[in-house]
Length: 303
Image 1 (cartoon, rainbow, N blue to C red):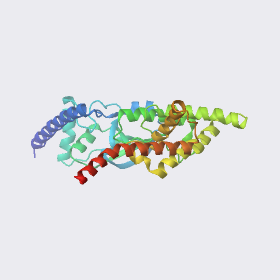
Image 2 (spheres, one colour):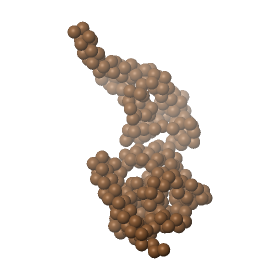
Image 3 (cartoon, one colour):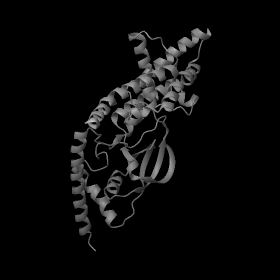
Image 4 (cartoon, rainbow, N blue to C red):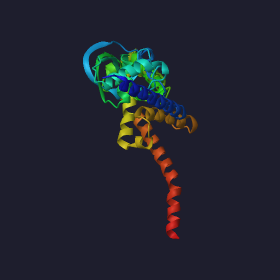
């Protein structure tokens, strides 16, 4: 039997994939989303990942494959072909799909929850276009101090780069393994490094001895950061700030405390007290915002 019907279908599928890529490019430009695959080299440089270590043959979810070792500009962020130059190889792989021809496993690097294609870009692209949920892959895993997910944004990557620097400086993940500080504030981790440095200085004055960096990090986390976070958790204030983290609110608590000290002359308070003051002020602001709406309803009822 001739393979002409398969070839014609493969060409039609490729043109459809290219049209979908065009629509995605327009939408991504309008919405500000990432348009290309993640670059492994970029991730490696920013997050200082280690490895890779061979993990053998695995079945991998196709939607977790979101990056490439060296061809990240040839496909868009969901592996649609970005150029007509990919037609011959893409259609060849697509014909194999229709003819039920087995292809070798793709080769992937794994970083956090993201897989990067080393070999098999066209196979992944065709698999996604066909709605295939899983794909066979030889996996090599790279060690990382921070987790990344397939939907990571450029601004998230910048913050994670700062987090890696923070962990390399403080070894907090080694000293207190359960500590996992998350931020959405761009300069947040640099500010935390400043907090630890100041805390170390005053510890030395109070204890009249040299304080090691490790001792200062642990003491800061246990006596400054964690008490604030405990208040945040106990009061449930985080729900008033969608998209923000406990680490973000910790920074806001300290900013609020210094504002009160400088602008209103209120002495600096212990971490728990500072957090409770912040929560109280936020609660009063929330009440003031909601009160006009309540008053309007009351007036309608009276009428």
